[in-house]
Length: 191
Image 1 (cartoon, rainbow, N blue to C red):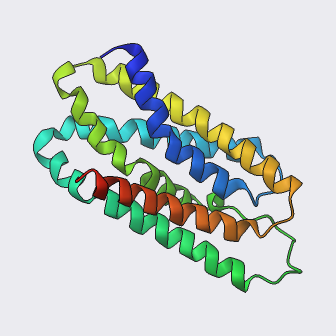
Image 2 (cartoon, one colour):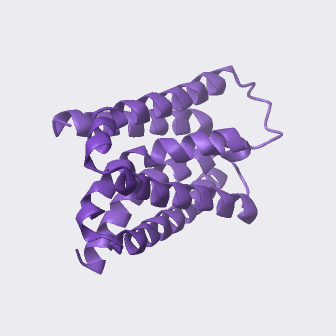
Image 3 (spheres, helix red, strand yellow):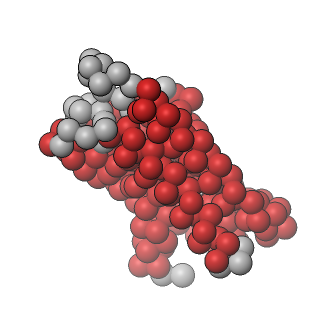
């Protein structure tokens, strides 16, 4: 497998991080680089860690996880997106005091990191026959997700500052949509 192919895999895996970071930062309203970098570090770490775990586990157990990974991602993203939708409908229109973000708590950041990276677990299987190449691949995958998460947060915050929308509602729809997309892709592909 070439360096270019690993970069393409990295970009593909980073798209969930990118979409979730846009959806979750759209209502934040201000640039807080320490939080943006923290989110990017978590997403990058988990996106790199999951293929490594898949590589360690090997084909036997990873095949079992591959059968349900799409359901797990769908359930987690659907739950969090649904929660955002409900909270956006309950929210008092006059309550604009603090910007909302899913990344405010460590618990939510961990949940989102796992949800966006769980289907990367099976990616580790393609590196099983390649030995120590996994370390290079994991580094590239982690870096790609890190960079796309930063870009997603910047786009989300910039968009959220320019338009006065119920961004929490939009973010909830996007998260539910990402979960549904993951589920449909796996069901169509017969996984």
